[in-house]
Length: 71
Image 1 (cartoon, helix red, strand yellow):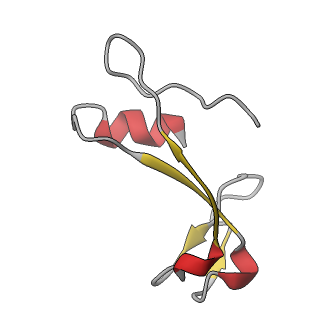
Image 2 (image 1 turned 180 degrees about the vertical axis):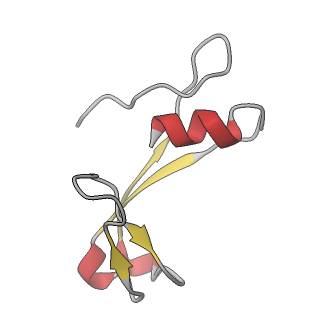
């Protein structure tokens, strides 16, 4: 997730959020496109009720996104 954020959005100065979802409540199909990846892709609208946590994506002094500290 951090690598994708840095690859495509590093130069975008806006604030970014990291959402944790309950996939069973997402309301749209989802799947793991890359075997072994911990991050599924959701194909369609995401039901707001499926969001279980919202965190701000932090950046370092150079503007790169950094890996979030586990909670």
